[in-house]
Image (cartoon, rainbow, N blue to C red; front, side, top):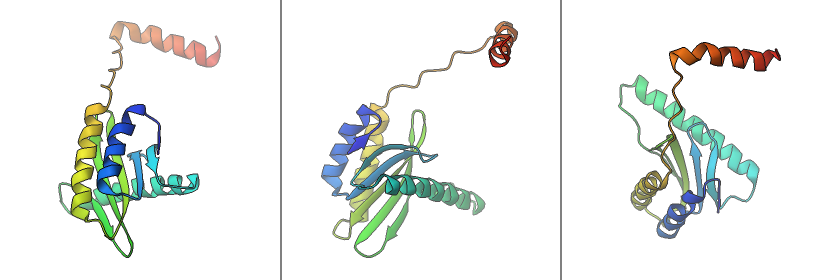
Length: 153
């Protein structure tokens, strides 16, 4: 298992133990990989992240066009491997989980364990740090300082 954020590892380890998932990819809605398990080649991780983010975005747009509030999960139940692609909300934006599991595992169980994973990740995430507000009286000074820095004057 590889993670960018150390607080992701405990909930992901519990999910892997409970769900019997073969491959797991956690990413932001833009496709930035947060954690992965089971992938051998980095090119597969990057390809799956890009495609997974695109599928979730296009599915969301399809739902909007059809007047559906949202489509929660995308599931492919073919052959020996099945795929769950599920967006979820985090304190700093939306994330996506891509889970590959065998035919011997029920999609319902994977969804239950994934819902728990999403809740555990949300609870473990550090609180977002609010950006300091720019006061109107500081705006001109900040703008001038940025322009001087940019143009070297």
